[in-house]
Length: 297
Image (cartoon, rainbow, N blue to C red):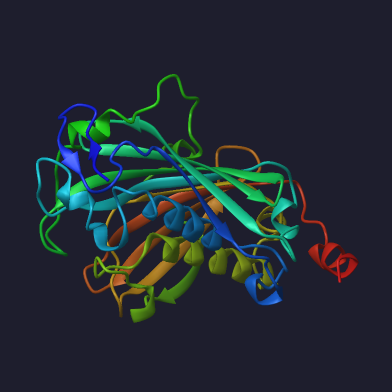
């Protein structure tokens, strides 16, 4: 069966007009939850990636994307992404439930494309998400932006509300002098086929730094209380690549926005620089996820 591009009219062996897809994860068990018995935000980002990579014109290794006219080697690089949780404690409700992630195409720019998501624990919607990606060409380590093919521009949606990814735009580049600091190292297992740390690794650095802050009895009490709230929204802007063996400093500080933490990930060696920045918006307090977990055993 052949498919035709909406703009070029070119024939493809895959559906270049597909703009929505659903990705299903079978029932979650205890090993799929974090230390608070919640689904981690890094897991949500991985399911978002899995959903978009099953679009017919993407597929593993971006094989089909490279065959969209005009043909050339292409990759998609994450510029920013975000999550908006529907209600406090929703991420503690995943035990013994399947997860459905629905992806659709949002806004499309000259070299960028927005992927929008709805995430469900069975029939219950728990989160909205968004990933802004840059079309790039060239070998790993030397990517350069390239225009979105016209047949894919035709998939754009109009009139969309602001996305969760925009939450991180107002985070300053400069880390405050009094920010709380933790450390991390990038593992080889954090890298993906692009030979840099996968975007979900940055979410894990955010999560680990936050938990370290909560556990540190010497940290400022108000900052610890702020960090301990349920996640209501999270956004990350990616500024540079991280690679295996990089040493990192992760910094957290109160945001100018109420009930929010700003987060920065800096490479300390080699080549010190800011790699990512983001914001975590929280509920006023974290309820006991273990109570919800025990009730469903």
